[in-house]
Length: 481
Image 1: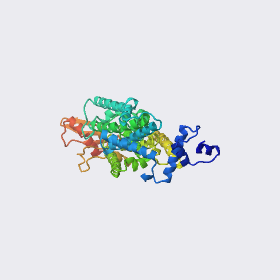
Image 2: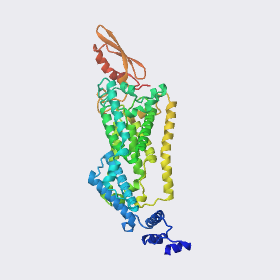
Image 3: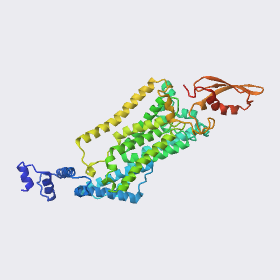
Image 4: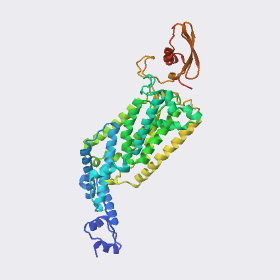
C-alpha cells in the first residue's frame, strides 16, 4: 500500500505538498481520478503563489512558467505575422487588447491539450480558425452596408447635390432631407409620436466627411470587438448606447436635428474603456508584457491616443447635425454595457489569486452595468415623454454640441453657424422699382419687417441667399421654439 493510500485509510490529513509529490511519483491509489489530480495541482499552485511574491520569477511554479512561455511565444508569433503593435488611437488600442486575448486563448488551448495529451494546434492554425466561419464580424458588415445605402439614398432625396459648407460643412444634404430620412428632431418624436427617430439616426450621416470618419472607426472598432466578444456583445454595445445617446440629445438639445452612428461607435469606445478597467492589472502587468518596460510604455501610449481620438470626435461634434450629447451619452452607456458584456481575461492563467470579495465584486459589476443602462434608458424616456418637445432643461447646453466656426471670422463670414436661420422663410413685396420690403418669419415664429427700399433689390435669388443673414441681424431668437 502506498503512503498516500495508507494515510487516507487512517484518516490522516495530508498537505498539498505531499499530494503533489505523490502525483509526481505516480504513487496514487486506484480511486484518485485525473480530475482530482488536476484539482490538487491547481490548489497547490494557488498556495505557492500566495506564499511567494508573484513578481519574483524565481518562485513561479513550473506549470505557471510554462503557461507564461506559451503566452510570450504567441506574442512573438503574432508580431512576426502582423508586425509591431501600432499605438494609433482606436486601432492601436484594439490591436493591443485583441492581441492579448488571442495570445491568452492560444496559451490556454495549448495548456489544455498538453494536460489531456491532445494533438498540438499551431498558433497559425489557431489564428485561422478565429477568422473563418461564424467568427467573422457579420454585424459590422451589415451595419456598413446599411449606412452606405442610407447615405446614397439621402443624396438621392436631396436631388443629387450637396449643400453649401456654410449650411452643412460635412459635404452632405440639407436639414430638410435629413429630417425626411429619419433624423432626430425632438418635437416630431414627442408631439407626433415618431419614436422610430430614436433608432433611425444611427444609420444616417450628415455628409461624406461624417460618413467616412464613422465608417473607418466602425470598421476597426466594430470588427475587433465582434471578433473578440461575439455578435451579441457588439450589438448590445452599439445599439443601446446609440439609442441612449439619442435620448440624451433629444432631452438637452430639442432644437437641433442630429444623425450619425457616432453614438454607437462611442458606445464601442466606452466598452473598450470598460475592457481596460476590468483588465487593468493584466494589461500593464510585467508577465503579460514579456517583462519589457518598453512594451508596457507602448501600451500606456495607447491610452493617450484613445484620449486624443475622443477629443477629435468631440471637436467633430461641434459642427452642425453632429451631436456631442449623442457622443458622450453613447460612451457612458457603452461603458456600462461593456462592464456586463466584455469578457474578463482570466487572472488565474497568469497565477494571480482572486479573493472571494473580488469575485463577488466582479459579479455585482457584471450585473449592475447592463441593469443600470436599461434603468437609465427608461428614466430618460420618461423625461422625454413628459417634455413639450421644444424647451431644453439646459439652454446653454447647445454650445456643448455646436459652436460657430472660426471664432475670428466676422458674423457674416463663418464657415458654419449653429442656429435655425438656414430654415427661415419670408414674403417679399415688389413694386416697379424692385423689392422694397420683406416680411421675415423668424425661427420662433415671430414676424420681422425688413426695409429693402434703399438697396434697389431686383434679384429674388439674392434675397433667398440673404435670408439667414437677415435672420441673424433682425431676429431676437435664432432657434425654433
